[in-house]
Image 1 (spheres, rainbow, N blue to C red):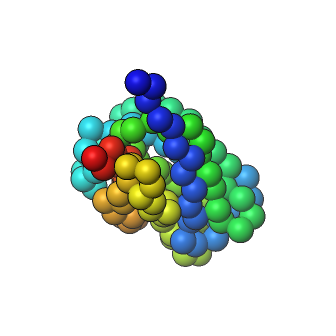
Image 2 (cartoon, rainbow, N blue to C red):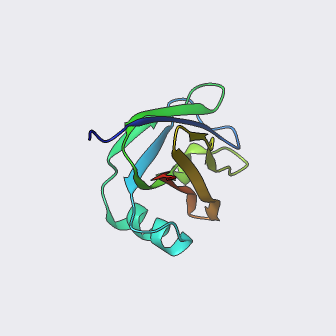
Image 3 (cartoon, rainbow, N blue to C red):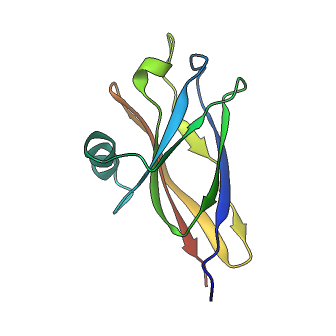
Length: 116
């Protein structure tokens, strides 16, 4: 059986500078410590532009655990966080573990799983 792929969309909760990107990493878990580790020590698997309305989309993701990161330099006076839209469709679900971070990290961790 062929593995399904999913299109994931979301937005950043605060205005970012024009030309900013959201970076996607694969992760072993969805803890804050795990998310910080992958953003500091691993290479992003892709980066997607953040649109003028602060939205973004990532296409063709397989089942797995992921972390999104927006560089702190992308924000103006207020720091925001990337947030993905959760779904539950045809036996699969996307579960957001958290969105947040600290004064150096703007993160969101989520998992796409087979719900059956």
